[in-house]
Image (spheres, rainbow, N blue to C red):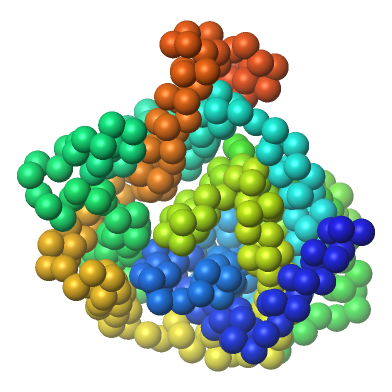
Length: 501
């Protein structure tokens, strides 16, 4: 009953005209970002992070959440019409969706993607509403040793999962940890790694680093390495589904939702695995197997798109309750929370209950807004594909520059922004994930403080980290996250070699 009362209070906050406006603007920007190939929600949220200095925390986080799940809706449009997934989670949607578009059924593919996203997003939000407080109630009992290991788990997760190489992920993480050390030591009060530069005494701004790595780095990378890309667009058809397509879609939506949610809630989750699992499930269960890979099977669009949105919505559970981001965008949102002096984690539901419940309630509202935006107005979103890329990336650089300069009116910040942007280009060029840098910067100083507190409790003995059952469980999960992907690749390689032999 307490959860229902809290959720109703959240709706009362989220339904104020100002917060509804921010939710709507976030959904519109998110859909546009999803439609435009090459610009993901992480870039958009990073570019707009400077608004946190001017806007109320609740409105700001509702806005960023709208961009996040709005981009997942919009991503299906380019996957289906252009065979160009804007996000990795939309790759599987493109496999059957583009074939449906080529056979003149683009409208049905877009309809099942939009409605499936709504169904999955709504069910996943219900799960977030009831499951997140339970996780928070249990996690609030943790002490400094468990908090430290929880942050180590966050480091391990983003480094091992958000990239193709664990070694590159770890290198990016240590770069972030190093950047987090710049400034005044929290305990001793000594300046560290400032090089005598007064602007670095307060440490590096998370917003500046995030904007530089994601927005500026992404824009410069596209300009330098991708050049002009010729895209061929499939013809649009009326956005609707026949009775048979409805019958084939709704079981896929429900199955995919319950495949996607668990992968969003676990620290080593993400949306790529559940979308592939959903596709494989639908292909196995479908009575129309001949359509897969030929004319396009609607189940192959309905399932993966629902799994994608369910997983994306469920990623808010580890972010809000444990402070663990499991995607690029949640890593940036972690920075937005911290910019307001709010630390996501076990105590968030106690200290900032009104904000959290308003954010969760806004997700129900946002899903409805996105359904309305994506079905009748899909023709309008398709017109965005005509915007020349040169103007698009020039606009990103202008917004990023003005936003960072507006924070402190510092020329030093602008120089640092573009230095970090060039670092982002190099990281993208050589396949280094950027999210671990931001996570290392944000959680590094907190992890350092918790480690010192834990060692004080243990009188300097490192065994304090294995004295409690929860600590041992967390250490086991860390080892599993590091080892399991390698074992999986090894087994897959052996299986492939056995099949070829």
